[in-house]
Length: 443
Image 1 (tube, rainbow, N blue to C red):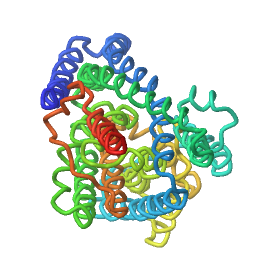
Image 2: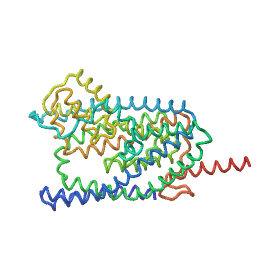
Image 3: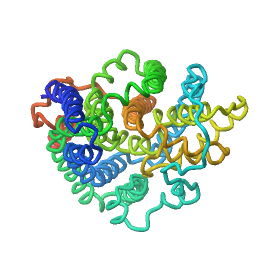
Image 4: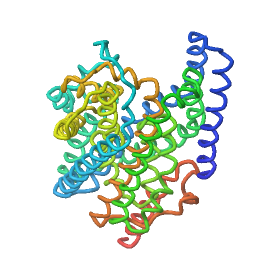
C-alpha cells in the first residue's frame, strides 16, 4: 500500500500536467472559460485541503498534549524547545545566505529592464506586523484557535494543558487516556483522508496548467530553473547537516518522508503533508512526545525553502528594475528578512507578503511582486517541499540529540496490529504491548 500510494501520487502529477495541457489547448485562449474549467479541476484539491484542515487542529492538540504528558519533565521540554529554536535560526540564516549567493551568481533579473510605475503589488502586507504577531501567538479562545487552524495558538494552549496534566499527576490520568484515544482516532481518520491525496495532486496541477499553460514555464524558465538549482543545493546542505547527526539513517529518513514531500510539492501546501509526516516520523523512530512538539514549531519558524525564496525574489526584482544594491544593503535585507519572516505564521501567501514588505521598507519597486505572480505557484511547490524536508530533518536531529531515536519499523511493511493505511498505529501498538507486558510482570 505504501509503494502504491507513492506511485498514485506520481501518476496524479503526470496526468495533471497532461490533462491540464489538453484543457489549455481546448479553451483556446478564452480566459473566462479557462478559469471555469480550472476551478472544477481545483475542486479535487480544495476538497482534500478542506479535509486536511478538518483534522489539523485536533491532531496537533491531541498529539502534543499526549506527548508532553508522557514527557513528565518540564526541564526536558525547555531543553528540546531551545535546541529546536537554535536549529531553526541557524537553518534560516543558511537558507537566506544561500539564496543571496545564488541570485547574485545567476543574476536572473538582469536585462529585463522593467520600468517602475508605482502600481500596486496585489499583495496585502498589512498582516506582517511583528507586534501583532507576538500578540496573535497567545489565544483568547481555544475554540477560536482551533476554528481558525492557528497552529501557534494551538501549540501554546496545548503546552499549558500538557504541563498542567503532568502537574496534577494521578488525577489527570483519565484525561490523558481520553487524549491518547483521541490521538489514535485522529490517526485513523488521517489514513482515510490520505487516500484522497492522488486526486488532489491531479486537480491542483491540472488547474494551474489549464490557466497558465506550459508556455509560462518557458517564459520564466530561467528564473524557475535557477531557483530550483539553488533549492537543490540547499537540499544537499540539509542532507549533509542531517548526515552529521544521523549517519546512514539519513538515507532511510529520505525514503520515509518521500510521500509527505511529494504531497507538499504537488499541492504547494505544507498543511497537506502534516498528517502524513507525523505517521512517517513515527515509523522512522521519532517518539510521539518529540515530533508532536517540534514539528508544529517548525511549521511556524523553520521555513527553509521560503527563506531562500525571500532573498532570491527580493534581489531578483531589484535586478529586473536595474537597481544596483551594494553588498552591505543586501546583507541588511537578509537580516531584516531573518526577523520579519518569523512573524508570517498563518499569513496567506506568506513568502510574497514578506518580499513585498521588505521591498517597501528599502524603497524598492513593490509592484515587482506582480511580475512573478504568474509563476509563483511553480516556485511555491519547490519551497513548500523544502520546508517539509527541513522540518523532517530538524525533528529527527533533535531526537538524536536527546538520545531518543528508536529503531525504525520496516518502511513498506505495516505493523500487524495496524491497518495498512495507518501504520502510525504501529509504534503506538508496540508501546501498548510493552505496557501490558510490564503489567503482567507486576502481577
